[in-house]
Length: 264
Length: 222
Image 1: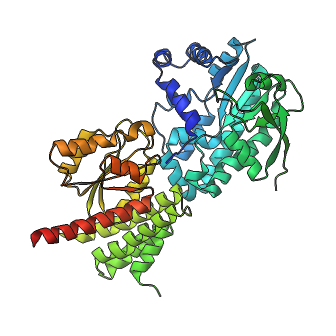
Image 2 (image 1 turned 90 degrees about the vertical axis):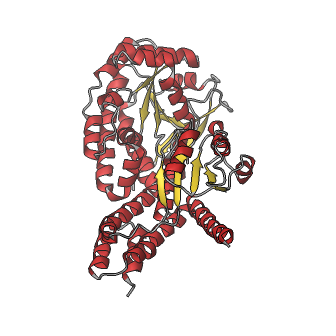
Image 3 (image 1 turned 180 degrees about the vertical axis):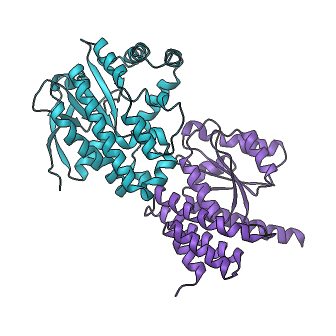
C-alpha cells in the first residue's frame, strides 16, 4: 500500500540518502549546512530557485525518535526556533527562494510515525484537530516572517495524507479542510510571494468545492519562473494543479486560485 | 438479545475497546468456553473488519482500532486459557522482501491474519531470504507470506523460494506473495503457491492452504 505521495517522497528519500548531502548534514543542522545542502540540490535539479525545507530541523529536535504523544509532538513542532531558517533566508538575499511547507497532518505524522497517528485518528479526534489547528497557526506565523525576510514561493503539500489509505472522511477532516483553514489564515501575509499547492491537494480542494482554480497561460514555459513572476502580482496568492517537483510539465498551463469559498 | 460471543464480535468490529474488555470479563465471569469466545467473538469480528477494509468501507485507522479492541479482549481472555493453547488456524511468518522498506500494507495483512485466528510472526521490513527461511524453520511455520510494494524489489521474492529449494525445504512451507505491483501471473512465474491482492483475500487464501494441507495429511496417513 502506498501511504504517501510516492513520487515526491521517493525524490526526497533520494536526497536524504545522497552521500554528499549526508556528509554535509552530519556536521549538524545550522544555516551553513542547510544552505550547502540546498545549493547542492539546486545544482542537481538545475532549478532557478533554492528550495528550503521548513521542517529540516524537526527530526534533529526530536532526537530522531518517534513521539507517541500528540501534545508533546505538537509542542515540539510549535515551540521550535525558526531563527536558523530565517538566517538562511537572510543569507540568500537576492536569490529566488522556494520555502517548502508541509501540511499540519504530515508534519505531525513525521514526528509520531504513521501507525501511532493512524490509530489515534478515530480515538483522539479532538486532540488531533486541536494539534492541527495549532500547527497551522504556528506555521502561518513563520510564513509571515519568512515572506518578510524574502521568500518568493511557498510550496505547500500534505504528502502523508492520502485518501486511499486513511479514507475520504478523515482525509477531508485532517488534510483538506485543514489546508483550507491554513490558506485562509495565510492569505493576508502573502504579499510579494505566492503559495503553490501540490496538485493532490489543489484538486481535492476543488473536489470538495472549497475553492476553484482558473487556467492561466504559462508564458515562460517554466513553472518556477512563472511563479516568480506571479509572486509580484498583488491579487494572486495561490496556484495549483501542476507539480513543482516534476522534471517536465506536459502543458504550458498553470492554475490560479479564483476564490476561496466562504466557510459554512 | 445477542449472545456474548456475538456481542464481542460486534464490539471488535465496531472498534469499541472498553466494550470488548467488558464483554470478555463477562465471558470469564459466566465461565463460558474461552476458546469458543476467541473464535466466535474475536476472530469473527476481525474477519468482518478485514472484509470491510477490502470493500473500502473501513480504512487503516478503523482496522487499527478494531485490533485495539481485539487486544483489549484478549488481555482478559488469554490468561484464562490456562494449559490450553491459543486456538490457531495455522502458523505464518510474514515480512516485506529484501530491499523494500514499505510495511504498512504488510502490517495490515499481518493484523487481519492474526485477527483471523492465525499465529503470526512478523519479521518486519527489508527481510533477507535467509531470515525468511530460518524464521520459518524456527517458528515451525506452515506459510511464508512475502510482501513487496516496488517493482524493483518484487523479483527478490524469488530468492526465498530458491533458497527453500536449495535447502530441500520447499515442500515444507507454502509461500504466498502480495503487494501493489504483483499479479497472479508473477506469483506463478516465481513459483509461489498463492497470491492475494487484498488483506481479506490473504486470509481466505491462508484458510484454503491450511484446509488443503489438512486433506493432504489425511491422504498421506492413509
